[in-house]
Length: 504
Image (tube, one colour):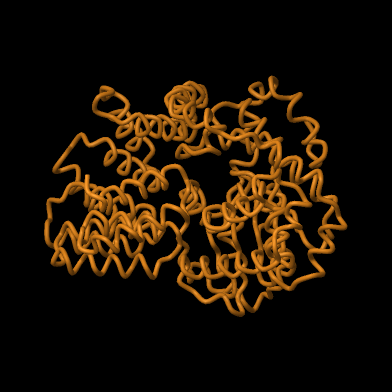
């Protein structure tokens, strides 16, 4: 292997180990050594896109298209790069260009169908998936897209028929993750068809499949004890001093909680305000900034003293990079606007945000923990460090108590003007009233409301399909149909439920 490929291989290895900053430097080295290699251009463009340096990603995409003569394969690869970088509309444009040059490109048809369905362009997605299934009638991933289209049209029986085909296929034909997703979507459809008794068995089968991948991820998880100590260690005096020392964070709202607490629904409703720019689960902070801050601590434990010892110049640099990263990812200038950074899992990073952006505001949606836990159990999540801990009722309950316990710990130390809690149950009962009060807290007025549907929303959250339905109350009490499943976690949940104002 020559040195060019060694540098590319090193970049890939570092990226897989989540050492993104180091990986980027090796991608730069690969590009300098072999600027005309399609392989280097493709991998590097995807790394820069996921590193939120989209200008560099676009430059490399254009170079690839020139190098490969605007071929069908070049447009397909560029489309994949855009999709992986959270630009689905751009991805779809290039998939279409690829298909105009090579109509029978099976993988491109599948990708186009997946992206169009996610963008809620159902008729377009249906056309792509029909062509895909004509070429490969038993392609499992295409059948799943077809099932989701049927489900969006409330054709639940037809959706189940597609999923049954996938589940019946032998293991050598269906990837384990695809089978797990099919079973989870089948469980949801069974619930909608009034077959509640079938739901849990299908969910358990799906989670059993996912557990095999989760075990590898969990074996490499670091102890989060230091983060918990930080929440306990931090004082109201620390928070007040940080807030009075800087204007950083004006115009930023961090929405954090726990998945399935109503964050995506609330974000979509706030997105109707013209001045709101919503960043939906983009990991600008955790991918670009957190590793830099952790490194600056020099291997010492994460503590309030440690955060205070990080040079102010680095906090300012991180704040600047946070804004520029969001602007790159969202393709919008934030001046005069309100950035709504919605990411449920960022609840673990609140102290870092409060030091980096001390004038920001916090919005924390809350929901009956039993509803949250059941909804997480019903949901398909791609496997990662967080979702690997959400594979049964008890593990979800323990993770929930850990995360929301952190919020309860720091809530009592914050100035009440710094945070706003929203109850999911109140939101679904009176959405306009709840959102209006929250908008007022964020500094928005009713005259800033756009027409419903006038602001297209691209949602990266796994729950994008649910939000299309708008506000509905049926999920609020769904846990009651499976109440006996919570008996075994009552001891775990009850203290936190009491602190949040919910009763068993």
